[in-house]
Amino acid sequence: MMARGLVQNIQGWNNYARASIAFLQQDFETLKAERDLLAARDMRGLNTSAVDGLIRCFDRPYLEAYGSAECRNPPSDPAPE
Image (cartoon, rainbow, N blue to C red; front, top):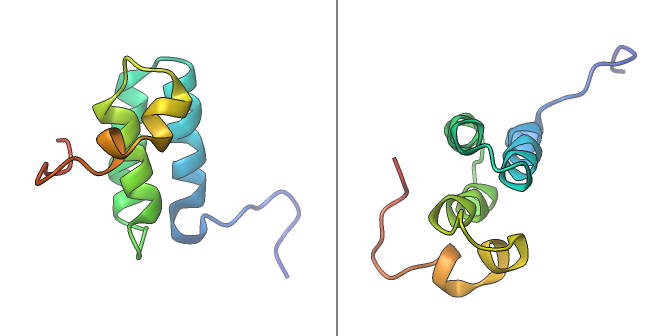
């Protein structure tokens, strides 16, 4: 049983959530920092891929940055640094 107020960061979920919030607040530095923390915990890489899309398409609306194949899966484009 978890102590009251303690929230587990299972596979980087908290980092994923904070990265999404940073994108919505247009805070690029926090977005990149949370992405790096997420990548260390995201075993399957699905959330890291989504955050990479937010970084690649930072200047676009959330729905496009999150959902478009161009942002999430560009051909042979390595993850942003």
